[in-house]
Image (cartoon, rainbow, N blue to C red; front, side, top):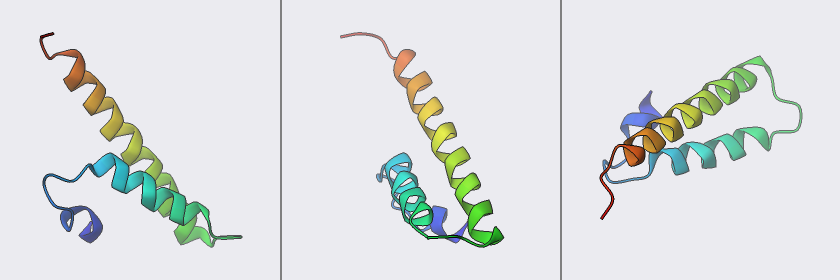
Length: 62
């Protein structure tokens, strides 16, 4: 949670979460805590991207 609230409001949270997800996946054989964090960040990335895509779809075309 601290990671999420420490992001600047203008930051691309999905990009930051993807970066953290890559870092977590870089561990050789992670312990259960890292595995759980990896799943949580993967879910966060999916949710943020789904939200971004639905927001863009609802914007009127110029």
